[in-house]
Length: 204
Image (cartoon, rainbow, N blue to C red; front, side):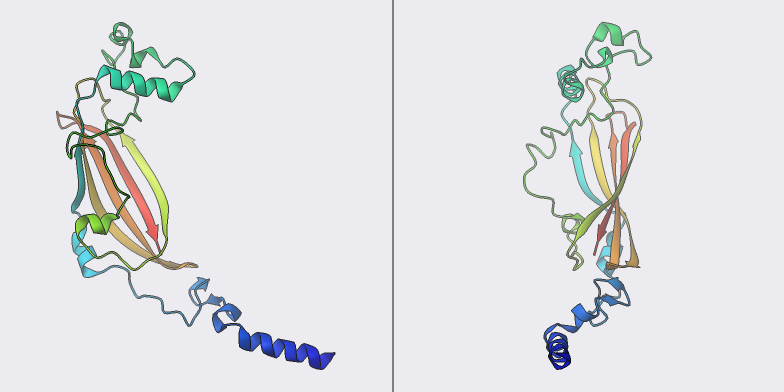
């Protein structure tokens, strides 16, 4: 019996790849010592692209109907606050008229520039900038921070500008992780800040 167990262990150790026998390497679980871990995901071209704009959109003028329908959808089946659809009531508030809910998206259906409906899947920051992307295989949402400014009103034309703001790297149990940060700013026709968004994407 002892001889049979010894033979089985020998076969097991020779049949299983070394990575599976030593799954925990110097970079953490799932990153074996034998696997080559890159020194950096950040190329000189990526570094040079930091601060560059990679997306811009301009909305059609916001209408009372746009705001009303958005509010109905958000608050359904309840009636939305009168601030979003009753002009007479809204005029008595500190806003002095109808305003949009802060989460209102004037680009939800179509943009005026670039014209039409957006088609195709998300291609990534580097592709939008004409830069070779890093050789990573997985992408995670690293968090979102939103700051609201002046409220959107009927007649507003909103411009959205997206910018690559930076790269950082960190070693973890998944190996070398790349943290990409980007910002998106919405301004109205009077150059007033409507909303700013800071987003982090994690790749490894």
